Amino acid sequence: MKMVVFPLSTVLFPGARIQLKIFEQRYLNLVKECLKKDAEFVVVLISKGQETGAVPEVFSVGTCARIVDWDQLEGGILGVTVEGGDRVEIGAISGAMGELLWAEIQVLEDIDQPLLPVDSELAGLLKKLEQHPLVKAQDMRIDYHNQTSVVWGLAHLLPIEAMQKQHLLELDDGQQRYNAIRSLLADLEG
Image (cartoon, rainbow, N blue to C red; front, side):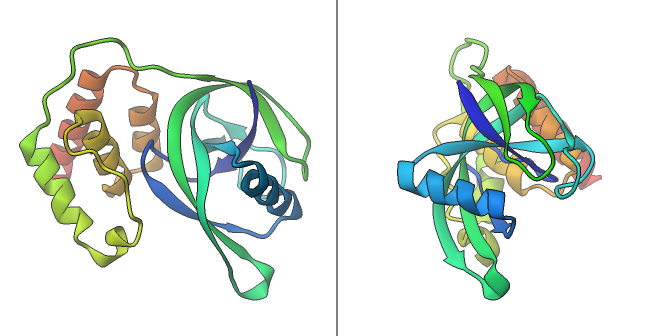
């Protein structure tokens, strides 16, 4: 399936929400169409380049994004809140500077394995983080009975580099993702 690709300097995880400030006409038109048709676009991390200007290089894995809220900000800027859906693999991108970028995408499935039990320590940490007013305002959709949902929530909130977040997003194996988030937490604790 073909979708619009929105290159950013941040990673969007399934179930997480991020705010975007939309000011370029091409993206204002995209938001209008998405709201009209209840459509999604793909958020992907930039590997080389910038969000504005020349077409940047992006990673091959991103996340479908659905608009869940919007608000008109000062200066003609549109504030949009998007929520992450499916992880997707991004094919060759087409489009020129100043145009929307399009790519063939394929939904990525996790490797089949038994449902992982929820780590109560990780779930407890995530619940504590969710009490912060800025996190509460995001209204994240966490399923505390699902280890993958807990890991995605922590990956979104932890103060780690975008490349580390991208690595987590690219992992197809829930056990590997769990091990990686535990390792990152150990590094943060020192």
